[in-house]
Every structure is written in structure tokens, then in C-alpha cells.
Image: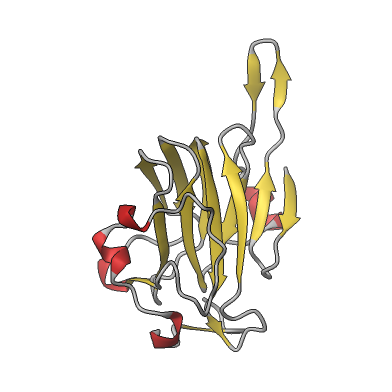
Length: 189
């Protein structure tokens, strides 16, 4: 597996090796001991999956507050997504900054989004199937978010991003400036 840095500290892209032959390929997509040694010493407790039927579906920007903060290992099982992380750790040199990676089923690449970061994505193809392992169980009261198009963050979303396809929850998220300080740089999430 290869690890690639992004513009945000601790947010990394991961590309598993593929062993191909005329029948297709084999790929080890996750290995706990490798992940702990090379990316983050965390334990995954839940795996989620979403299907987005249309091109331009935006999901996010989401996070869970303490004590249910989640790290997410995201991969696209079918289709392609523009996957985004935003630093919301107060005091971080990169607070409010974002990084994005295009995840595709064909490439099999993944994005690690640690606790203290928003996560969201935009579908680039129809019928996108996205899977993500998380480090904490879902908790409805801790489920929070920020507006996907917050001008202070300034994410350059793909032209296909379609605000008419947002969930009701995502149409009412606050701006980053309205968000309480849920995470602090240098303090464990």
C-alpha cells in the first residue's frame, strides 16, 4: 500500500496494491497492523455504506462531536467521488482549510479523515457506492455538520455539484464561523 500526503496534516490518501492477471486482480484493501504502523493507531468499530444514484450528489460536510468523534477511512466501491476533508481543530495552522482527493472504484484508493475534520463528497458518476470504516459508533446527538458551500472554507466543488440534491439536513447546516469549538489542535480527539 502507498500513502500520499494531502495539504492537511494527518489526512492521507492510501492506494492498495493490485495483483493482476488475465482473470482480474486481487487487492488487500485494509490490514490493521499496517494501518496502525503507517497511518494512525486507531480501531475501527463500524462500517457504513451509501449509494448515490445521481451525478452531483453532495453529502456533507459532517463530523461527530466528542466523545463520539469519528475517524473515517473512505473508499468508493462503484463510480467516482470528489472526497473532501476540512480541518476544524481550533488553533490548527490549517483551521478552515480543505483538501480533496478523487476516489474511484477503478483505482481502489482511499482517504483517511481523522477526528477533528469535516468530511463530505460529491459524486462524479451515477450509482456511486461509498464505504467508510469509522472509529466510533454513530451517535445521533453528536452528529454535526457545516454548510457544504461555506464561502469561508471555499471548497472548489466539481461543476456537477447539485444543491437541489442535498439532504434536508445538509440544507440547514451552520457556517463554520457559527460552529462551537468542538476540537482543539494538539488535544487528542
